[in-house]
Amino acid sequence: MNTYHAALWSDSSSSSDDDTRYSGVLACFGQRDLITTMPDRLDVLTGSCVQIPCSFDIPDQNKYTFRSTILTSGVWIKEILYFDLHPDNVIFNSSKMVNRYQGKITGNMSQKNCTTVFFNVTTNYTNKYFLRIERQPFLATDIRKSVNIVVRDFPSSPIITVSGEVKDGTPVSLNCSAVAPCPKHPPELTWTLPTQFTPENQLQENSDQTKSVLSTVTFTPSYLHHEKNITCTAVYPVGTSNNTAEHNMMLNVSFSPKDTLASISPADPVLVGTCVNLTCSSTANPPVTNFTWFKISGDKLIQVASGHSYSLIVTVGDGGLYFCEARNSHGCGKSKEVQLAIKGHEEPVNPKVFEIVGKTLGLIFLFSLIVFFAWRRRTSRLPSGFDMTDRSQGLVGMNSPVGTVCSNQATVGRGNQEPPLNNLDGL
Image (cartoon, rainbow, N blue to C red):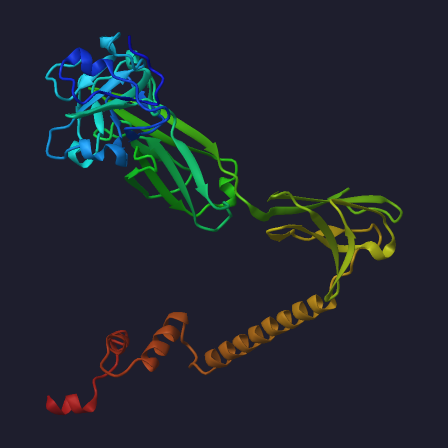
């Protein structure tokens, strides 16, 4: 009767019968004759494939029995190691043509690479698996290390990460990663963002030698993108169909105060002694930490109060323009001015306005007089008996060069004149 108390199965090198090979003998307590390296867990999609990254090493005390010139077989055992009592738990043996699981060892076993791919996985594949190495005369199973395969009908959601703080006007990179348990058919990643972007996708190897797809987008966020949703979608090809998973995240954009607004109540002119409230509002992330009120007095700014609102009992000297300033850790925002008007004490119109208007009207009047007298002077020099049409033609003829169309037309219009003397001499 066999006893299994060792940390590893180490088979008798002299055995050749299959039953004896799979029964095993007791190894030294705590001693490992085979050391395998593989992931602790793999999440797999129904109908797809799964690649198990795997490597192994032989401790020094057994290296003399591991001959690199002899063909090495890899055996995968499900759940229970006592496969002499449960032969159905041997689901794959690379030395056999027919196995319970359809698969292939893609690694180079002579180089101690036992990476294996299983195809068309089903939910029944969910279990833990151990690796056994058979290379006569070396036969061993590492019972300290196993891989837990979990098969699901739906893929795991991708993961979105942000590199650094998302600030208004500062470029930032977003990363989306999705596991690729079947590297031959990796998922395709797509983004949904509130702005234009160009993604960069690549298949990468993780620290445990598993694969994943990484998609990176770089964009410049605006404060208008704050609390907008972004989505990364992973599409897994499974046979002739696709399986989809997505991850949604809300953008948290940091920005200085925007849309700062000062308001006054009541807004109409008030009497002296009236209570007036001035209120400042602004949008910011993080929220505004300080509001400050200013009054414009001539060419100077006077700070009159701090706080979200400012209340005062109106006196004669309180009339004028006010504005507020909102501030947080990223900067400040200034509002437009609001007018506090007092009945009976409305601010007079600036005398400079009257001066400018008066000078403008004077220049217009003077220019009009000059034009009028110039016109009167020119019309008074024309011979008597000219009507307005003759005057126009005469003026055109005087201003046109000899031989032009305008001068010829003026001559034709005087049809009863005698021809010049030089023309008569030719007759």
